[in-house]
Length: 322
Ligand SMILES: NC(=O)c1ccc[n+]([C@@H]2O[C@H](COP(=O)([O-])OP(=O)(O)OC[C@H]3O[C@@H](n4cnc5c(N)ncnc54)[C@H](OP(=O)(O)O)[C@@H]3O)[C@@H](O)[C@H]2O)c1
Image (cartoon, rainbow, N blue to C red):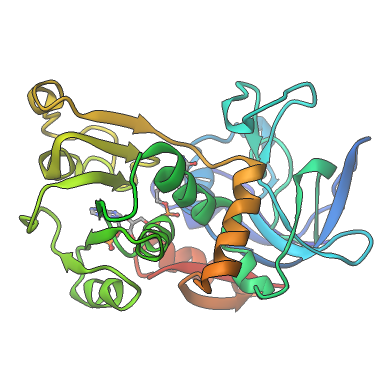
């Protein structure tokens, strides 16, 4: 079948290991099913995989992609929950120490079809297109859990979203605004700051800029480049939720004194549960909020989307269609 996959790792030039070609159909163990992929979306996870982060060499070649929307074996419109937990695991799938994401241990979604445990198939609301639904399982689900499960934010509170252009960041801005939260965002790029305000940020600023107020929570995906600013932006007792570190994991200033003196909370967050994915789909159905899509490309042109993401030249999600 057609597939987009990682053949080798290259930490500095990740696109060197990317192949658009053919792979065997996925194996379908007992209790699993297949989904015919109509749309998938790119995540920074796919770039990390090509750099050799989170994927083992013995797993190569590996079909990339965590997110998909498509048709199940009965022709129903579905989306796929990307967190594969152990068959014996019950409860929050993100806390299973043996969990993996599609494209880590099992082939991913950038292909004609993907095999997943039957319980990972979630109905797609009819009001969402396949392209929109394909944005939900990783970036939007991660944002939903950060905001509504981990942060403690309530309607009327305030939040800072760092690195406004990212897939997770655009989701955070749109979800927070729809939930009645005052949203500040930062971006390195003036045009992206303007876009951030168009999609719902009350004010978008340069990285490191002084905010009009200290915020109740900060959403971190950028890491080293924005960490110090994030800590300084919080009110006493405020909460930082962090799900990623695109710019690196070693900030020059740890700001530890502020963390304890101001009694800040730092909360790690990863993906979300199958239940949260269903709630997110309903949230979009009810509010009319739709993912910000930077571009939609046929899957054959996946390399162009990967290149844009490596260059930081995206605002929102890159969607690949089949
Ligand atoms: N834990 C999880 O479950 C989980 C789930 C999803 C994503 N993540 C992680 O979260 C991060 C974001 O993911 P994504 O898919 O949204 O990635 P993305 O679309 O590539 O977004 C990253 C954003 O970070 C900002 N940025 C990148 N490099 C920067 C630098 N050197 N200095 C300042 N800002 C920089 C950029 O914003 P501007 O250009 O606007 O400044 C960029 O748009 C990734 O590290 C990803 O691995 C984790």
